[in-house]
Length: 433
Image (cartoon, rainbow, N blue to C red):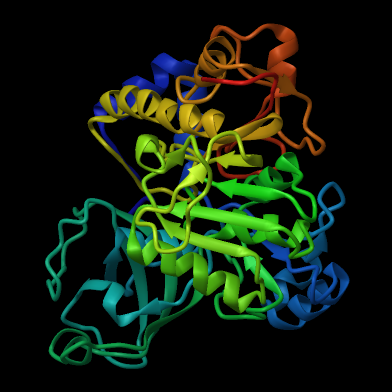
């Protein structure tokens, strides 16, 4: 059985329209592959050199030689992913995991019982099995799968630690179900490792905080902050000195920000449950009121720097095994929705302050087109970023050649082998009413 993705007709046609047939095919191929693993270092408590040494002792033997500090971003340690490796699954009993479980496994995660959806009747403790991701998410928990015609993405082979009874007839089965010792892609499993020293974060996301370049003592806002990766990075770059406000609209999302700040030993982050698009409810003309206010009120044009990383179509996320049949509609809606965040940010940013806009998509409508909108609508100008690893912006979306040189986009097939991403740095040039 071949490794496959579920790509709806609308998704394929939309990507072909945006980038052409050749790039669209390249895009889907690369999104099914995991990128290298990148760990951002908490430089307040350790050094990249120490982290790299500890990681070499923890990762599989085949990956030890690939652990390195990224020269262009020295607070990031990278571990390369090995693969794809040609594995033979013939004559092995088959096990199916959920699509989300499969995507996590491609990045090195273990296979736990809750992620297993189906297995053949021959499943027994200790036997070797071939593992597939159910890319349609259509299998019923506990299904029997004895045929080869169900669309699946082959993840590799492993040893079963549970049988069908343990997996499907035990209330809330938990623990490792399969040890995948012959993965198609070999990546390190680093969750829960060195929790106060590192934060696992995709490379472009680590670039963003350096592009914003927050300084100790400044007043900074992260408008869509959960789970707190960029927020905690900004706090570290600030030396944990100053004030860093983080918005997200979900209670659990705010708790995630607080938990990550706590485990990294950061004290300047103030997380608030707040819908950043509803700016009339929390922007004050008369000053700040945060104690006891629900939602808290923030003074207009008071922040030194603001990061806007709004909800997006997430076309850059890797690995990804499924694509919506309604992609074109989603792209249009997201691009318009993101402009509400930009407006709120400009209202809160001081004249002379810095705004960074970023997304985890490669859709030009949400990226270059929204940069053009921001330049035309608000007192903003583009600036060259302090750190540049991405490529120039695409043509045909309203940006001049000089402006395209100032933004940066990361493409899944690009030289750094990253997820897709985009960011742009603006300077506010005057008041905005």
